[in-house]
Image (cartoon, rainbow, N blue to C red; front, side, top):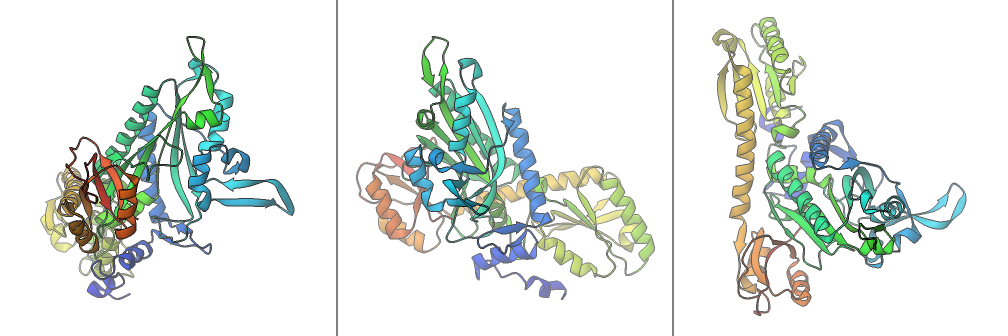
Length: 479
C-alpha cells in the first residue's frame, strides 16, 4: 500500500465528484460493502459499531421518555395492509410481496414490512379496551424493505435498519404532544450527539407520511448542498384507529377511538454523518460515535522496545476512560497508519516516540483540523477528554457555518432557479400554500419543500405565483 499522499488518492476529492467521494469513503473506511442482492448492502463491523452507538443512545432517550421495546412480524397480510387506503396508495410502488411459501402458492399475499402501522394497529385493537390501557408507548428496532429503483449505501437501500415508535393516546392533545416531543428527541440527538445541525418543521401536505394528519421533520444540509430528511414524527390522528377499530371505553362510559403517533429514524443518518463531516481524506467522526476515539501510534524507528513498552502503559491508562486503539502492527510504517486512521475518522491520534518519552509527553493530532500539539503525561486523561469535547464542538460549528453560508433568502423565481442550478443549498422563500405552486416548483427545478420551519415569520408573497404567502418554506433538492 503506498504511503503519504498517494494513499489518499484512493478517495476521489469531494469537489471533483461528490457522489464518488461518498462511495469511496463508505468502501475504503470499511463502513459497508455491496451485497450480491441488488440494492442491499452489508454493514461491515466498523460501520455497524457506529450504528450500535447511535442505537444505544437513542434507545436510552426513548426509555427516559417512558417508551418500551417490542417486536412485530416482518410479514403483513395484504388484507391488513389495504385497510388504510391512503397508506397503501403511498407505499404500494415500493412494496415487496411474498406469493409462495415453499412450493405452495399463498392464499393471501404477504407484504414484506415497508413500515408497521397496519400490523401493529391490528394488535393494538386486541390489547386496548379501556382508558386504563392508555397510553401505549411502544418502539421497535427492526429492518424494513422498500423496493427502490435508485440506491446509495445508507442513504437509500432496498433493505435498511431503523426504529419505529407507535403510540396510542386518550386525547388528541396528548398525541400531538407526543409527536412533537419525539421530534425534539430526534433534534437533540442529531445536533448534540452527532454534531449535525438540522431545521425542525412541518412537512407540506404533499410531502407528509401516507396516512398521517401532520408530519414533523428535521432536515439537514449535506456537503453537496442537497438536503436530507434525518428523522420524522407523525401525528396520525384517528385514521389508523378507525381502519383497525382501535377503541377504548373512556372514563365517561363512551366508546372512543384512540389518537395515534408514529416516528422513526434510520441508518440513513449514518450517511448524513459521512456527508456532513467527511473531507477529502475520508471519514471524520464525532467522538460519541467513533468506534475508536483515540488511536495510539508508537514511533519505533529508534528505541523501539522502550517506546512500545511506554505506549502499552499509556494504552492501559486510557482504555479505562476512552475507546482507544493501540496500533503496534510492525508490518506497517507510522505514515501508513496515520493515513489509514485519518481515513477512518478517528478523532484524536496520539504519537509516542523517543523524544516524547524524554519529555514525558505525547504528541496529539486532531482529525478535524489536523492541529498538532504536545500534552504532558501528567493529567493526560483530562487533557484528552477536553480535546475530544473541543473536536465535537468544532464539528458542529463548522457544519452550522456551512449551512448558514448555503441558506439563501429568495423572493423571486428567477433567483430561485439560479440558486438551485448553481450553489444549491436551502432556499427560504414564501409559499402560498397551494399544491399547484408546490408541484410546479418541483417539476421545473427538482426542488421540494423540505419543511415549514417552526416559529418563523413568512414573507408577504409566494416565490412562484406572487400571491399572498401563507408560509415560509425551506426548499432544496434532496436525497
